[in-house]
Length: 177
Image 1 (tube, one colour):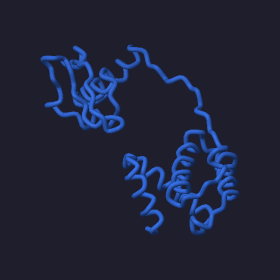
Image 2 (cartoon, rainbow, N blue to C red):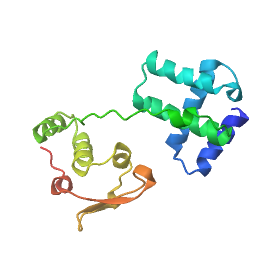
Image 3 (cartoon, one colour):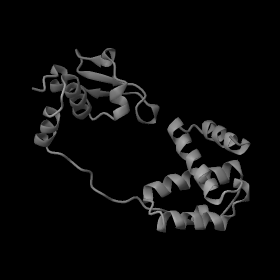
Image 4 (cartoon, rainbow, N blue to C red):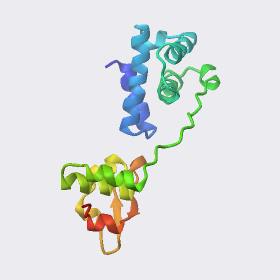
């Protein structure tokens, strides 16, 4: 790993970024370096502009992917290499406004009933009924369930924050069939 990439990762750590963000941003910077096959400090503002145009028009990257690339590369060039390029003020990829897929209760039941094991039923019922993120559900422990108060303590959720969520009666009973 080059000294610049090591420094970049340290800058992100000091700025308080999560490990997944550090990995994503580092990947974005390394992808740019591989694209031009030259040292990062030798890449120009115009080359960066052409890179994102290629990613958007030729590779068909979504706005979300472009924003991740932008965030990592922008942080690298403005904070690690300390370049003050106008491109970082000029570029904006808008969020795509799409409606989430919402399943009916009947569809959710059908999916859960189709699962092969009681363990699968319990896991997905818990995930769905409490609105948990996948990582939150996979790290959940019995001691986190406060059944007498009908609450569940979620540790290190999004943003590495703890939170408490209501425990629905159906989840407490855990009888899917």
